[in-house]
Length: 197
Length: 133
Image 1 (cartoon, each protein chain N blue to C red):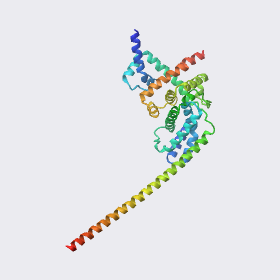
Image 2 (cartoon, rainbow over the protein chains, first blue to last red):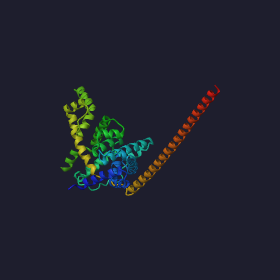
Image 3 (cartoon, rainbow over the protein chains, first blue to last red):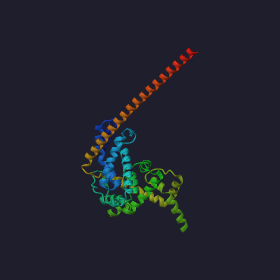
Image 4 (cartoon, rainbow over the protein chains, first blue to last red):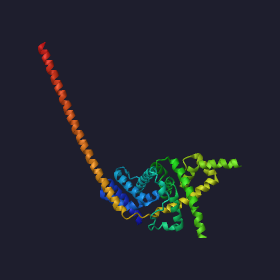
């Protein structure tokens, strides 16, 4: 019997197919099913609720307009993550040009309440909080690569394309971001072991 | 000794893309960097540390951040506005195409008429010249 997550995934792919064929109700249903996930990524990339909401709105409008270009060889969620990453990058670049970046760089996330997930409870609560805080403390460009690669598992070439950088630059940025995270959190393995003693 | 350490550090610094790839479970694309990592204990330790960090980060994937409850209705409204925009743009595109086709037909008709008149005038002139001759 398929798990509930598999059923939702199957539904999403079926809805995406219908929406691509021009079914507007299917697109609405798709937004209802996926918007919390898209918002979570946007929040992790931008670091605050207002920017995340703007990015999600832009991402879905772009998805709606470009639905015909969704080939279906990747999952709809992956396609949506790429659009969201691109929108977040554009949104934050525009804001940087308006010199407002320093105001939000150190803003605490407004609502980080995790929804119940069986896998999620595996991680120690304080380590999770430390990791989330450390991610927020990273400069935006470093945060983007580490979130997209390590949290959302997007391939390097997709990340490079959406952020407008080379694959090598994405990898170098990822390495530096991980090092910075370790400096902020410490080695997760060692931290867990220390807490266990 | 210090010089050796400095040289190794430079090599380690230039192999960071390979370390990032290996920590993610991919083969590095640069063979020289891969070779360096396979011989450098410091880089191998970095790969191991990054793998552990990555495992912890992966677990954040399941932690949703709740959006504002109004976000969904705002999204649906924005999408319906975009759809209406798209429809009106498509209508004006169609109108423009129809106008262009009509203008093209009219221009074509005018050109054909002009040619027909020119031919008729030419024939008339030829007949007149022959009769005069």
